[in-house]
Length: 316
Image (cartoon, rainbow, N blue to C red; front, top):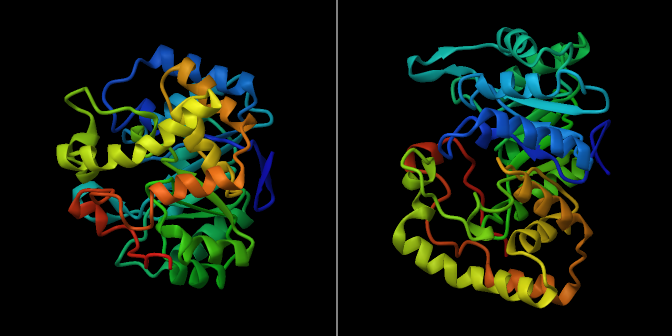
């Protein structure tokens, strides 16, 4: 088990995004079976967002947990901007709709999904703090903020969790963001701990898979990054486990809470078993030597989306 603020969660959570959004068409019945299997395995921490399928992901998760809510920690996210019209949405407006879609009385952890450049972060977290005080949410979270923004928010209200991308091929948070979260006692949630599947050996196949437009999934980047991935595969062969398990075991060694996602029970079970793998120092150094800071080929998002994530220095 792990702690995020005052919340106790499973050492691994479940990122539900791919059940509704980004990676092609999912089968809802299979998605719900996968969510139910996750609960049976011991996953208690589930992550969703209004932005995943325009509310569909929250509705799907709400149906899946309808008769098994006890003991689960449900996290969701909102953004101040509504699509392309730029109309500002308040946290209060968003939370009422989310509670309805999830069919719950409280959202255990509620994140600001991305900082609105036109809204001071102090204003956003102040609004979230009032919702927490009213019992609408259990804890305040932030996603993809800089260390400076994190400290500014923390000065306004207690922050339970920070969620950022973190994996062997995305280690920029190690420079300032992760140390700042630890210094302030803020839980760290790692999304895309398998590098959107790449570190497990997966590549996009469906035409509507969003990874097709990601720089890291272009042919030249795949070729270059696959050379580094070989280190993961070598460790997996040596330990007689899968590359996905090695990649997750590395993230878990950093004392953060990863939230891998999948549509398939066999992958879920494979991911969950990574919690039984303890990598020794030599193996951790071997993996990190294959993925030096800042050397992954290709940005992690297309150019427009990169504007919404903090530009962090590369760790020394």
